[in-house]
Length: 409
Image (cartoon, rainbow, N blue to C red; front, top):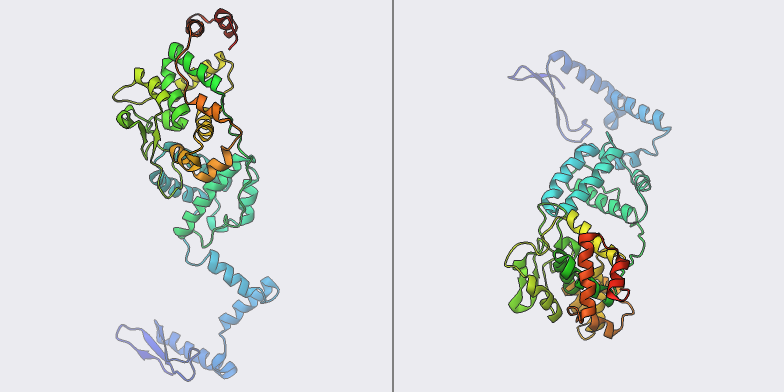
């Protein structure tokens, strides 16, 4: 071997195939002839001592360092494997940076403001907890301990759900090599109690709203007869879509729940659906129908205030989405021939959800009563309604109204 000067002023040394460590002819480049000569001398000395399979002094020093730090070389394969999974070919990203990127992506993927708000809130909590930490440094144990700081039940379930989506996104973006959330089992949640109203309670809600609070009447009818969710009728955010009067197809006796209005689900058939308008619902809606605009034309704050006022006045317990839950339960009882499948399609639920949460002991006659409630039936009830109207104007108590009507509702 000897140094050969190149046209660019550098020197190259060719290591023959017979003595190279790779078994192929190798080329080594140097900026000066002295560096090339030193390489030749070191290489020949190494080769005389160890032959073709010998290692360099630098390599021996590295091996000694690893052995000294680990107490042996047995763990070296495991360390290399871990590095390939967590450190090789990944882009280092702090928790805060990763969350910012994911939230920006999620807001485009999930235009529903409620979903986007929940994602932002929960992942900012995660980023604050692991502030300054890089994602690939977080282990399954770290994340399990973090989830343990969240209130058990639906709150922890929701955080686990957002973290699953976030870390899958991080793997796709190359910020870490494997998902540390995947081994964590699903969070247990309490069995949700789907409470319902009685037909008598629904009747009085409709009667009193018609006389004393007509703004609430479209909500009561559409939720209680047509299976609409609160979020599909009442806006929480200004840019949310809700059901419009133009979505009510009077000639076809149907309500079109558009994709932008319907709650987002993972059903393969999509979220859009059509709900029937039965005869009783039509009779309640016809006098107040409009050609355009939202069916429930008020803010969430105003709606909440009126709903509390109405239910408090009637001594009726408020049930979250209770009118919709009632409509589903009474539909299964009133129309057994349609079965679970048709009710599920009207309500925008899966059949499994209907079977799990809405099958209850409701008599068929109760179901038929729920879907046939008419306007007030006699002068006594009219007196009651007039009393409710006066309550809104003069602060009359429910007891005084019951007395004025001659009975306790």
